[in-house]
Image 1 (cartoon, rainbow, N blue to C red):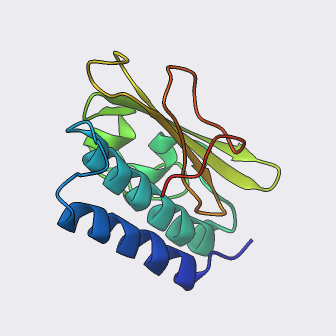
Image 2 (cartoon, rainbow, N blue to C red):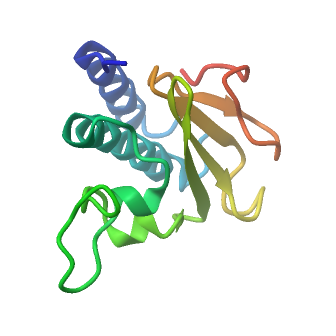
Length: 144
């Protein structure tokens, strides 16, 4: 499935508008950073599929290779180690390869303390949110 540049630009514009508003959407302090990390994963999934013909099935596949190891589909060196570790900004990040592409979940490590909502997206690049501790899914309300 090809990712539309239009969708990427729309998502980036939405994040910019929220940043300009100064968080008036009742954001937890880490949620804007988490949304930027999700956007980075989306962008790097696009690059990964163009290089290797399939989406990455784990954050490690998008992350850096070890010392002396050349980047490849096992570790493409597209995201920093801090994000490839699966935990950043008080959130746990997970990606999975799906029959139609991939899915990304970002959930607070300690719900209510490190974040107040969970996020989900897939190759459609539409971010969904859940205001409870249950992981967001494609059926959750769209983040706006």
